[in-house]
Length: 188
Image (cartoon, rainbow, N blue to C red; front, top):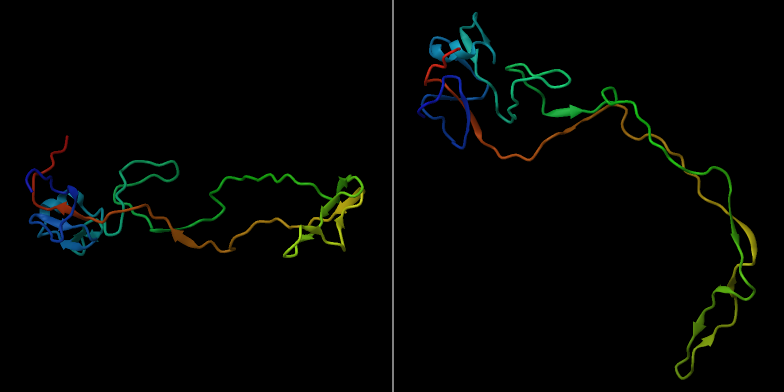
């Protein structure tokens, strides 16, 4: 690929490694074999002078994050992160939730005129008009009646030991490659 800088990383849809490029898989490579690439990235991604090897970035199943700082810890060149996250209460700001309710007995007044029933069953025989069924009528006598509400206990819920959960955005898989043969990137 023409015009690529040594050390440049590209996301490509290939199932093969193009000539002059290396897969960003975190592997170690010989410094003597890839002198220009080692001169550009050094030991940022692993390796050591004692081993005679240097590493390329491991971008398998990773999202690339730009160099810079965030509000908490900042991002250093070559730094990585985990795919799972365990939520704990320590980084969360103190907060509370308000629940409006009433404690104690609840009294509801019911004032009904005489002979006002909540329900009177009716029936109809095959060759007759509807008739009111005689028997028990459902009525509420006038006056004040106590209504008993079920008590509930409110509290916090959750697990005592935080568990990692998936923290994944929608994605489409491509391969990342680093240029090992190309144009030397001039420094200012």
